[in-house]
Image (cartoon, rainbow, N blue to C red; front, side):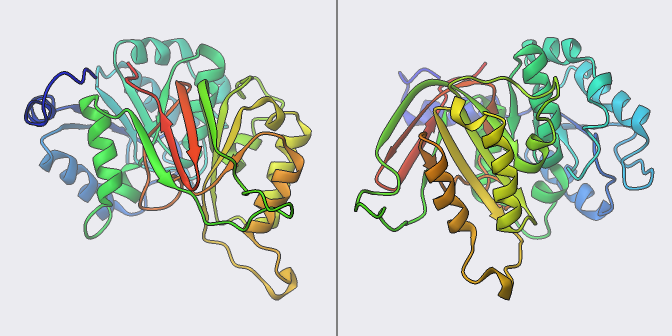
Length: 328
């Protein structure tokens, strides 16, 4: 985005580029909360967008949004829709089953023409497979039902970041990391860093780990890996990270950025073992910096992240910034 106009012009051009064609489809779990689905569609329309709903968006076959063939066809319809954005209705589970049958070149061609694929959670499988197979960039971001279809108002930051994507103005994201105790030698837990031109990749930790040893995991060297998860006890998060560690994935990165890990229950058996224990342990295992508290995951406040794009990452004190400039 050029910076040679004043704020008034910026506001005007944001406004002028507002109306987008958004395609809603369901590649993973079945939509059970139809009221939230309708609210999400209505909310996007109220923002001035043209919303097209896939004919099988509300299909149901056991826990899935239709059988495998139905969901596969929905993905390919989204790619052929000519939309500006293809937004998943929800995550859940189901995409790893489809990976060998997805026509990645068709998706990459649509991305080249301007389609932005947006999703979270189970969508990590499609995003990473697309990146591994074609190098195409997609966006880790909201889902229709859980983020835009909430009762009450959607999170302001998530909505602003989504609108930034639609208008082409999103260029990065800054946040504050957790306050952490200094290391045993008195040095800060996270030293000031600056990483330039590294590939951003990652997503849901459990889904990403399920791709290790398959053709669908990108072989990223010198990347910035971001991770989040929901409903996983810290020992299970550590076990998943251990898999990435032993598979050699973590040591090949320039930085590891931990998003939100939530909705788990500690027990009496843990005796003080908690999420911070996992972060502390991880830092003893890898030489690369481990940053915390990225506003992304199964939480209302989530930024949008370009999976596969070149980014720079800086951290100074507790302030961190991921910057990707203008991703076409």
